[in-house]
Image (cartoon, rainbow, N blue to C red; front, side, top):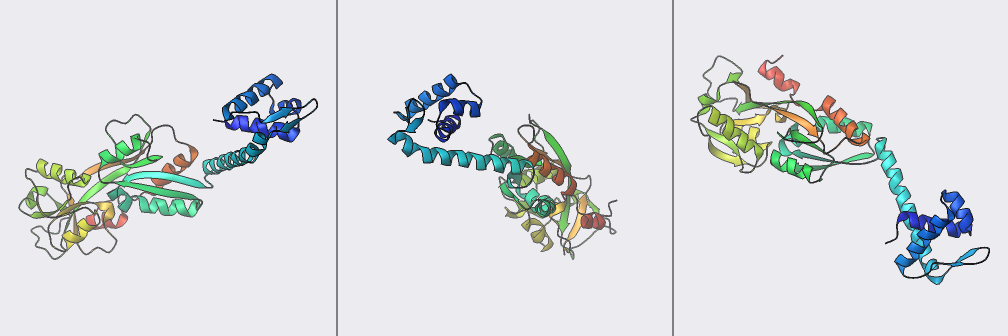
Length: 304
């Protein structure tokens, strides 16, 4: 298969009409240029150039190949330009992998700022149900950066985005045994049927784990695949739900309480290797703009 360098040599020899002038222009020795041309001809199965005493001319095979060589070099140049533009945050595409709940609650503010500042850089999202699936996809090279719970063992760079807070959602008009406190102990909800998550969803494991630590196994009234549905179902009276605080909308009709003790997880942006300028720029925006704990939820919970 012809290399781009060999195609460049062919085009230059033809344009200059001389091996000597082509070698000077390409900054290579004439023997090296001749060697690469012979290798190219061997690869395609026949002569491309006829060597004349004072010039060169294309053979029929050479005439057939020349326009394709020029097209390949032009396409390579367009690719280089695109890469340079992307490295300068002017244009390109960034592949971002995340989990469902983070794409719903954490990413939108950062993506909005990114789009306003760099409209030429598109974002392609890959969303996963579980943090382990996210980690495996990132390790397999699916995306440029992963945003989600920080894996326990990750060899590449990791930058913390923030600490995600979880809240309990109950119907606003449901019975209350407290004096207006914004905190609730999970064991007081042990007898309730819960709004739970579908098996395989990472939040299902989280709910089972924290309820188990509180001394009970949650009974599911309904299971949902969608993180956004959980607070809505809980507010409708189907049972308590444990949800990321950042998915609670501004004007929410349900009652939001903070578990006691708090339930939290660290979110980060991680990559396989050192970041290119495009990825690094995105992570900077993410670290500044990600809505890990919304102000309106902090106000409801009386948090400073």
